[in-house]
Image (tube, rainbow, N blue to C red):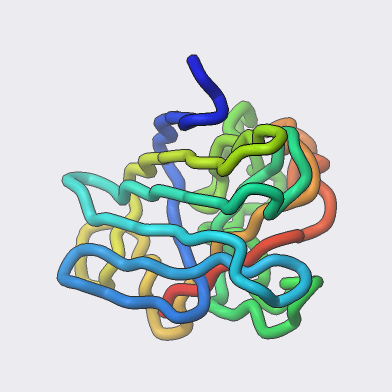
Length: 178
């Protein structure tokens, strides 16, 4: 598989997204992802599917350091504390001690597979999360609730078991959907 072209992963149990300048068309939402300097570094698109949400992430060349990065969906649709992104709160569907795709007590709805950023290339990834929906009133955990949600990318790899965030480190990018 050519990692510089696309990383495709399927996940059952997570999905929420967000960024500034979000636009929605029926069952699709697109938002820009901002980096630690407060500038746009890419975009995320969510599409409502049967039984879940499909998310496509595209990051510009050099947007983040090369390597693996944890990526999670957070409960509050804000990235206003640029560079820290802590106002986005904890994960969507947070359950104490349940973080991680490998955790027998988990996963939380906010848990997603890691994203790989290739050296000297744009990064693209696609994830599917069952049990999530874009709109309230549908079956599943709604991402576009009253205060929205946030997609947060971390500085390091998520090991999918260590509490509370898999050792993924600082929050380095954020997108908001409301």
